[in-house]
Image (cartoon, rainbow, N blue to C red; front, top):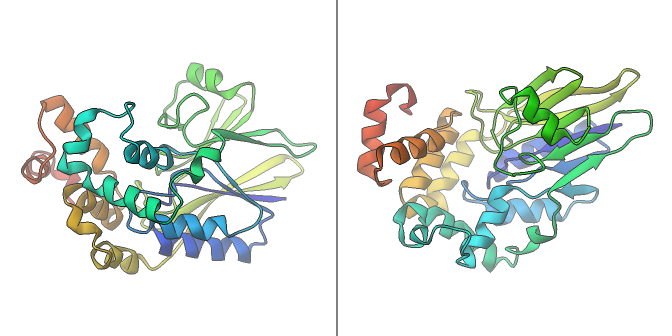
Amino acid sequence: MNVAVIADIHGNLQALRAVLRDIEARGVDRVIVNGDLVNRGPDSAAVMQELLERENVTFILGNHDDLLRLWQERSEDLPPDWFTDPFWEATAWNAEALDRAGLLYVPQGWAFSEVVRVEGLPEVLIAHGTVDNYREGLSDRMSAERLRQVSGGHRVLVGSHIHRPVMHRSGDTLVLNTGGVGVSADGDPRAAYLLLTSGPGGWEPRIVRVDYDHAGSLRRFGESGYLRTGLSAEIFRQELLTARSLYTPYWAWTEAEALPRTPATWDHFLAAEPTFRPV
């Protein structure tokens, strides 16, 4: 049996389609979409529709899938100042696009986690982050104690969220991260997903890398009008261009320095942290 776990598509339709073609060519039995289909990129509605039209697909809720609903509802779970901050215009743009397509509330029916059960094999626990928090990245950097807490006794754990593939063993627990289909954070611009194959010795994991029309995805930022929303859309475009995490370190830096997130502080950040400078 082959199970493909894909995640963090983030509105990148070109990357998704390339990955789905690869999955079909491999004769995969089951596809699990481990959250964050939307936001960051310009084609959130098209990505969700493409996957909803397919059979034998299981969906797990990611933080961005939930965020767009919370945004559109002006939820009290979000800081009130976000709704008047121009930095969040890219999120507003994507929430509106999903709402217009009638897809905004579809993720409310998605589970927070999934357990894959195949007779004779260890159960596989899959969540976008962890079963406790969809923003908590599962990786080789998580402590053994925390892994025990989130594993629920399962010996194979699969997460996403961090956009970085991971294959790591901690004691008798196999820790896997899918990496990102739509945007990577490890310097490799190709789409990444996890392929689990049943074997005589248990699950055999493999990170699959897929080339796609990267230039076409970058063009969509401009053609769609998404870049006109401002700074955060440009940061997301730069992440796609460089296959590196820029948004998170920039956010952390502005928080630490108590600075607004503006084009001026973005330029200051890049000048102060040249290792993050995009091309």
